[in-house]
Image (cartoon, rainbow, N blue to C red; front, top):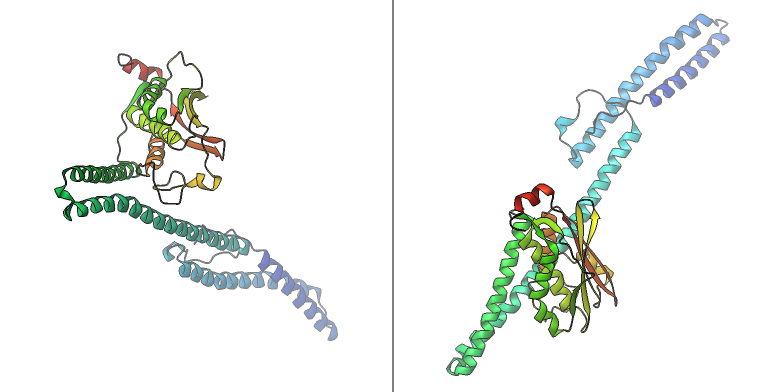
Length: 358
C-alpha cells in the first residue's frame, strides 16, 4: 500500500449535505401538508442527520474502497499485504489514480528494459559466438589439412602451424579481454592511482604506434606545443590502454594521409579532458549510443579485417568509469570522430608524495 492516503472527505461532505437538504425539504413539505410545521424539528433533524449521514457514508466508502484497493495491490504484488494498514483508509481517488498510474508506468519501463536486455543478450551471444568461431575454425582447418597429409611437406607444415598459432593467439586475446571486462564490470579490478604527466604518456603512445600510423600515412600529433607537464592522478597503465585504443581505432578507420590530433584541456578547477580527434570516415549517428557495447560493430558484414577482440571500447568505457570519470564520443559522417574522457588533476599532497618519481 502507498503511504497513508491523503484524507479527503469532500465526497462524504457533499453527499451528506445533499441527503440532509433533500430529507429536510421532504420533512418540511410533509409537515406543511399536515399543518404541523415546526422550525425546531427541522433544525434538530438537520443537525442530527448531517453528521450521521457523513459518518455512515465515510465509514462505508472507506471500507468498500479499502477492500478493493487491497485486492488490487495484492493482485499486482506491488507491495506485501503486511504493509497495508488494518484500519480504514480515506477515499482520495486522485491519489489512488496517481498510484495506479505510477505502477503501470513503472511496469511499462520494466518490460521495456527487459526487452532491451533480451535483445542485448541475443546480440552478445551471437557476437561472442562469431568472435570465437572464426579463429577456432581457422585453427581447425589448418590442423585438419596437416593431418590429411600436408604435414609431410616441411614448408607447408611450418606455414600452417604459424597460421594456426595466430588463430590461437587471437583466441587467447579475446579470452583475456573478456576476463578483464568481467573484472571491470564487477568492480574487481584494483586501480593503482599515481600522479603522472599525461602529455608524456600520450607522446609515448605516439612513439609506440609510429610504424602502424606510418603504414597508413596518418600523422599523430598534438593540437599545440605543451611546454609544461599536465599532471593527473589515475592508473597510468590503464589510462595508457585508453589512449592507445582511441589512437589505434583512429588509425584503423582513418583515411590514408589523414591526421589524428590529441588535445588536453582544462575542464574545471580539478579536471582535464583528453580529446582524440581524427578526420576519418565518421560514425553514423544511430550507432553512437551502442559503440561501447561488447562486440558491437558498426560494420554489420561480420568481417574483421582489422583484427582486435571487439572489446576495446567496452573496456575503455569501464576503465574510465572505474576512475569515476566520463567518456564522450562525437562523430559526423565524412568529417571524422572525436573520443574524449575526463581525468582528475593531481593535488599538491599527491604531488608531494610522488615528487621523486615525477
